[in-house]
Image (cartoon, rainbow, N blue to C red):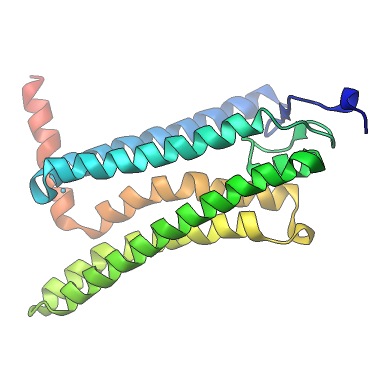
Length: 230
């Protein structure tokens, strides 16, 4: 195939051709992400992470998470826009997922993106091992609690978060490791929505529903904000 047939740009297809449905999807996903951002912000302001863990520890953990995510996204973004496409340039997704881009890429440039995926996989496994070890330490500490009520309360906080993490990990692994024979536009879309939209939205909801102290702290926070604005 000659170099003249290479394509250097791609086209993202919308969910629907109708303008009304496009606006509906935009409003829906924007609302979900804004609600998740607001809810997580309220939880951080009300569970006083800076007091419990220390401000320095909180800043370091947040900086490590943001820096790692930004670097990983930057590497994939730079590589994505430098890969010539030989199998067309139309992506039937609401964002340019790597498996779909690889289907369109030229074979000569395929291994470079695969190398980044392998690097990301090792980083992902490192984070997963860290999470597992953290939960092992948490469960060991919980099981040593003398109060049964205290153990029940601790497990009620940990298990929903573990369920959300498991949902995210399982759907991401299915999206990136499933065989090509199982791939279909509808299935890929559902899986992408599940791991990119559901976890950040469900996590604060589970915390607020299972923790009465958090509900009370949020109620007090709202009352304080209302008094300040009066």
